[in-house]
Every structure is written in C-alpha cells, then in structure tokens.
Image 1 (cartoon, rainbow over the protein chains, first blue to last red):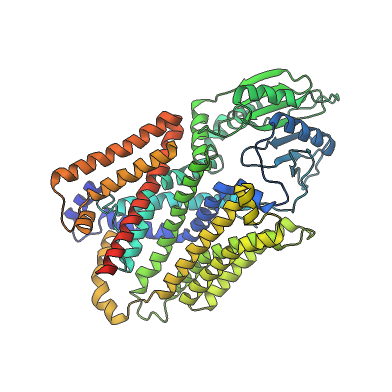
Image 2: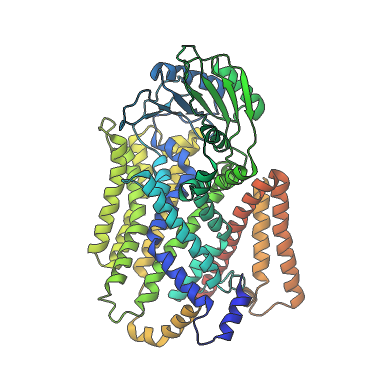
Length: 545
Length: 95
C-alpha cells in the first residue's frame, strides 16, 4: 500500500527524512495527543453495539423478552397512555419493542414550555400494559452510547466537536499509519514474542491491519454521522425556506415535524390500523417507530416508520397518515442519492441492521480497534523508556503520558465496571438515581487517576487491572444476590441477555487477570543490557515507525 | 449455518495464505516449501476467501454481504495469527 513510491523516495534521499519518517512522526503525535479520548470513545462505542442488551440488564425488573409482541397492539396501548399522560403535546414519538428491546421508549415535547425550561420528556413503557415501567431509574446502555460521541458534564455540542476533532485525528493516524507500516503484506502474520518494543509494534500492527477496513470505515462514518454539525455551510447555502427545511428533514429522518395546530379538537384514529398497514409492507416485526404531531388536534399527522433491521441504510422509510381519519397520505420509501449515501454510511457506523453473529463480529473487531489505540499509547512509553537518562526520574512529559495511560486504559475498565455495580447497589429510592450511577462512574474514574499518579507506575497498572478483573468477576455474584435472575436461572430459562452478560463479565475478567499477571511478571531489561542489545532494535523500529 | 461456513472458509483461506509465506514455512517445516506448493496455497487461500464472499453476497446481497465478509475476514485472520503465535510459543518451550 503506497510502498513502491515510498521506497523510491527513501532510496533517493538516504540521509534525508523520507516521507515514511514524516508520516511516522505524524502518526506518533496525532495518535498520542487525543489517544486517551480516542481510547474512551472506542471502548464505550464497542460496548454500545450491545446497548439494548445492556439496558435490559440494567432494568432487571422488566421481564425477559419471550418473542416480539404484536407491534400494532403495543403501539395502540402506549399511544392511549401518552394521550392521557401528556395531553396537548405537540409531538410524541415511540420506539416499538423488537427482538432486542423489551420496553417501549417514548419521548415527547411538552406544550408551552417556558424559555429555559426543558421542552422534552421521556419514558419507558411496558409493552404488555402500556403503562410506565416500574424499574429502577437508569440511563442503561444509553450512557455509554451517548458518552461515546458527546461525553458528559459539558454542553452536547462541545462534546460532539471534541469527538469530531478526535475522529479526524484518528483518520489522519490511520492513513499515516498505513504509509508508515511498509510491510503490511510481508509482515501480515508476523509476531516476535518477548522482544519488548518490537513485540508491541507487531501486536499494534496486527490489531490495526486485521481490522483495517473496519477501523477506516468506523472513523470515517463517525464523522459522517455528525457532518451537518462540522460542515454546515453547504446546507446553509442551499436550504433557505421553511419548505426547503421540511424537504430536507423528510430526506434525513422519519420524525415528522409539527406544523401549526388547527385549534379544533379531534381524537386520533386507530394507531393499530396504521401500524397494521406498515406491517403488511415490512413484516410483522418490521416497524420501528410511530411519531404523532398534534395528537388530539384536527391537524394531527402520524408517521409509522420502518425499523433498522436487515437493511444497510438509515434513510427514513415511513407511511404518513392523517391523524384523525387514518387516511394514508404518503408513502416515503426512498430518498435522493446524496441522502442515501449518508444513510448507508450512518447505518454502517451503527450496525443496527446486524443479526446477532454480525453484531458479535462488530463487537470483536471494534474491541481490536480499542486494543490498537491502547497498544499505541503504551508503545509511546515503551519506546521512550529505553532512552530516558534516568528511568527512575523520567521527564514530565513521559510522566504525564504514563500516568494518563494507566487511568485511561486500566482505569476506564474499573470505572465502567463500577457503573454496573452502581446500577445494582444504589437504592431505588435515591433521588436523581440515574445521574448518580453516572456520577459514580466519573468518581471512580477520577480515583483511578489519583491512584495512578500516587503509586509507582507498574504497581498502579497491576493493581488497577486486578481491581477491574475482580469487579467484573464478582458482578455475576452481585447480580445473583440482588436480582431474581442469577446465572443458573437465566441459563435454565434461556434468558440469553442475562446469561450472556454474566459469561461476558467472566471472559473480560479473565482478560484483565491475564494482563495483570503479564504486567506483574514483566521485567524491563537492565540498562547495560539495553545499551548492548536494544539500541539496534530501537533504531530498526525507529526506521519503520 | 452460512455464517459458520463463511467463517470456516475465511479461516482455511488465511491459514493457506499464511503457510504460503516465508516465515511461517520456516517456523512450521524448518524450510521453504517448493514453489508450486506455495503457489497452490496462495491460489487455494484466495479462492477460499472468494468462496466466503460469494456465499455471503448470494445470501444477503452486496450491502450486508460485504459487511459480514469484512467481519469474518478480520476474525479469521486474527484466529490464524493467534494460532501461529501459540504454536511458536509451544515450539519455543519444548526446545
């Protein structure tokens, strides 16, 4: 990949800084500067492929799914409930239950919200009764999902800008990394064990190269998901009128926007009948969402949208009905080429079309991407430790990177596990409970940073890795002690969300334990040996990046 | 079932491509294989990967098929690499 021209370049200027060396420097620094942010984005994004399952696990009061209920009946039930719960709402939208969601998530605009007041409400509803679910207050898997691209404790737009800049750095790191790594095919299956820096580089290369199509795709499509924020000028130049905006919205989303109400009261027609028409078109479980604008008003509109399963596109497909009569007004089944390009790229990023095997593939390759960022961060210190004049007293830059690595890699595992512990341990009556789960995550994460700063580096790594392993290994025990769904029961009942979560915790605990043992056993080579043996190896790596 | 078949095809494909390379040949057999054998492994490996792609695309179309193929190839290559490392470690310990 780009090797011939690069080799020529180096041959022509053997003493100069060739393109590859420049790219290597670029790769090192764009990888490092936001590497900690990227690691957190990668890991929380990776677990978000199972965000719906995580949400189910975090609301153990909701019964396990045993087949998808009839979406038409559920939609009618929850719509009736919303009419009673938020009368006069200008818009509500509900996500119907499917193979991965055992509740109906709804959000609504509140009528007449004063400036500065929150104009939205949200809730989870029981498909069987239509009533608000009585489960512990939690953001569930949506916390990791939202953190992944907008972080927390800051305005959403700031977070999204930071995520965008980090993703752009990642894209530069991927391209410069491919140019730097000149032997992609020759070294495809190369791993040199026990060679220090060389082994780290081989591991970093393998994790990068095997998942390269995914890593490049996920970074680029991540930028595409928020492109209207990062590059709004085309849209600003082309979209001038309210009608333009309405058309643009119809190309991007099935959330129909409320127009002007008539002021004349009129009840909604049967939502069940509308969803039935959509089921005839997309299959029994193929409906994703029902949105109503001005329900209860003569100008009401209802959109019934297709779900994301089985199609590699997030472009909206929906049926639009007159709310009071149920008359089908329009069928939106396709969008223009530009919007469809965006829809496909968006879908590739989210992977919601996946069956369970494909979702696992997404998860595993994304985990490799997380490890790619992690090995890259660690390699920065491995490579420089050999050149320190006094390893016992490293310079401040080295010190900062080393400590941030500990907290952002081992510490994040501890904090994420602590978030799940908080979900099981915080009392259900605690005020602002859902937010306290999140505060718990950040408090623990901050403590790991403090611990990483105060302890010697190697001890800090080992202790935090062991702590993460212990928290993960004991999570199924905590689950058994605090819920009615311990592993033996979930296995017997075929409740694969709970059983899978417990087993996955043990697998991840084992991974952390192996890392802890290996870090503990690791003996950095003594200085004389380093001088004698490692200098040529270091120089070779420097040449190859 | 098609997922499993595709994954096995990717696994055997990458195993063949790995054995067609210099370093693994020396690690596994202590010598380079004859050129015709190497070529056969390369062709067989590539054909195996293409077979997996064909299966997935015939099953799910190009969109989903390519996405699934990308996942299976990444995982298949990773497993082959892990197996080569494990074998190398075992050989190093027994020496």
